[in-house]
Image 1 (tube, rainbow, N blue to C red):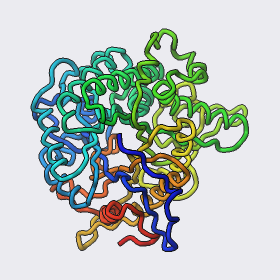
Image 2: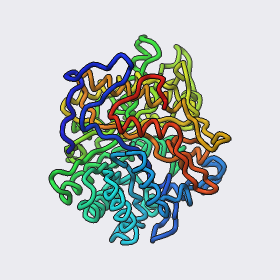
Image 3: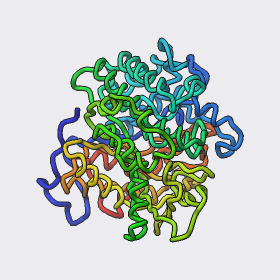
Image 4: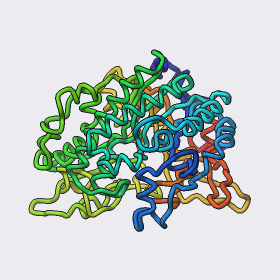
Length: 494
């Protein structure tokens, strides 16, 4: 596990010019996900994942886009690692494709798949870049989905076996592991609203999926511990929702409590505290029998100790209850939900909660820009789980990027977004939060799930027709931040 980061309270205050220094040892990196960048969808023994099938289903992904080629990272990884090195990145957070390693989700691994990740990791290590591997970033092998997917218990068991295979193959090279990325999205966007793969819309199945993701996380932690050296770091990454009530009236406060339960505590409860919250069970008791779903020992298994919690943050969540006598349909209630429009709610037991777009600037995703949400989230988690180190494992923004006549890509909005959010992290650390590092989302423009290639989050611009990479102004700005271990003064975008 990384050594503790010293508190900024013991350091010299920020200078008058506005430079903000981070503690020595703060880890700077960028993040990606396998299906979004790798391409080579049918090479090296890889078989379809749920995202291959979903993206080929008419009407599911913008313009019928798929990840078949994506940014061709599978073939261009050496160039991409060279680009990371040029930018001075200290760490690279990537995910393993389950169906590239274990195509059916069962049985022995395909060595060609493991060899790709061995080559990638060796390239990173040679460049002095720390590999940070995520076992699961939403791309379940389709054969496991055909057998029931995450709503069935067997998938959690298979995930533990897959974790053991990956750790056995790469544990001598990779010392930092993450079990799941954003299991809320896997469960509730995949099986609740259906806007993500596999596109199912059953609220009870979404809750079952959440439980089996928790159980699978616990199985994976145990498998990683058994295979990895004692000094390896084992973590999970959650997209915790910074939930805020629209007003302080009791009904709105209860709406916020409901969304916090099914958006956050459904995972932090079992993973960090060893049990599901009573109010979550009560809110959703009409949808399934929790006592039948959660077997003795499940919550203890999900609470297998981790070394660090990854936090992904983009925008806060503003909610209210319907006005007295008002009733809304799920699609209407979720109109301003940052997780996408659907006629089916991703919030089981809270379908009537209304979502509101906070005032102010928006990204190309129509997400409100509010760095205070990241500060509040970090400090809330630090208070509720003292002693648990944190890492910002995703943070970034999509804007309408395009090359200028000189070929450069000027993205001052992204620089401003990242600057302000890093300042929020700095403030949280100064106030005592143990935040060990920051990973920018994303290294490259890529396949942005149901948005296809219509949204660009990358610090590096990708011309999808030629696969040419062009670092944006934000990439150069971030490289300077990494080099100096400090945020440049406000307004300094050089």
